[in-house]
Amino acid sequence: MSQGAKFISFEGGEGAGKTTQIKLLGDYLQAQGHEVVITREPGGTLDAEAVRDLVLGGEPGRWSATEEMLLMYTARSQLVRTIIRPALERGAWVLSDRFADSTMVYQGYAGGVPVDKVRALHRLVLGNFNPDITFIMDIEPTNGMQRVHSRAEALNQFEKRDTKFYERTRDAYLAIAKAEPERCVVIHAAEAPEVVAANILHHIKTRAGGDL
Ligand code: TYD
Image (cartoon, rainbow, N blue to C red):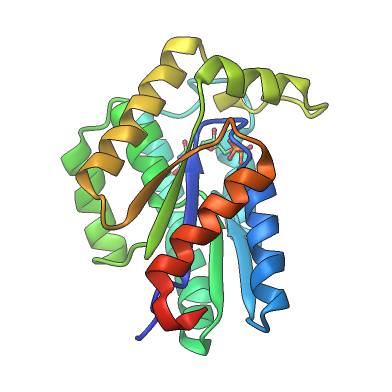
């Protein structure tokens, strides 16, 4: 498969503005005449959305971190097989609101599943399939949580955890970015949305070469 730089995931803590940035980038790419597929995890297919309701509904602690990891990878496997791979094969751009790094961070580093187990499951399910670029939307946990609480929506079980948990997830994302600098780009998400969008586009143009 020659996919260039077309599979892009957005990661980061709650309230980092992933959804806004995905929409802005999707609109830009479409305006350039590209097919764009936007998806999210957990979710993105009918069944995976059902898994999402199962995992995110209810109180924290309903599932063990290992159970959460297995559910996430079950949903992810179907999403990749039925939506993401076919889209990339057609030459579409795929923008995903979260992907495998979320499992590594939330169930692995912050949830306590040994990271080599998370890696082994990834290899089993997806081999070496990964995004071409991952934007890690970095924001102070307290700032991000203020943004989440100012939304009208009910909080999901992950949004009810304490500040320590968010600090752990932030540190874990930064550790992944450091370990995989060729794939990951850390974005200062507290800046104005249009500044963040310009920054993201700059990185994509640099990586995509002639594709854009
Ligand atoms: P969502 O409401 O989409 O949060 P956000 O707007 O921050 O993306 O909820 C997704 C939650 O699921 C989020 O708290 C992170 C968590 N999650 C995991 O714990 N593991 C995973 O593998 C994925 C994809 C998400």
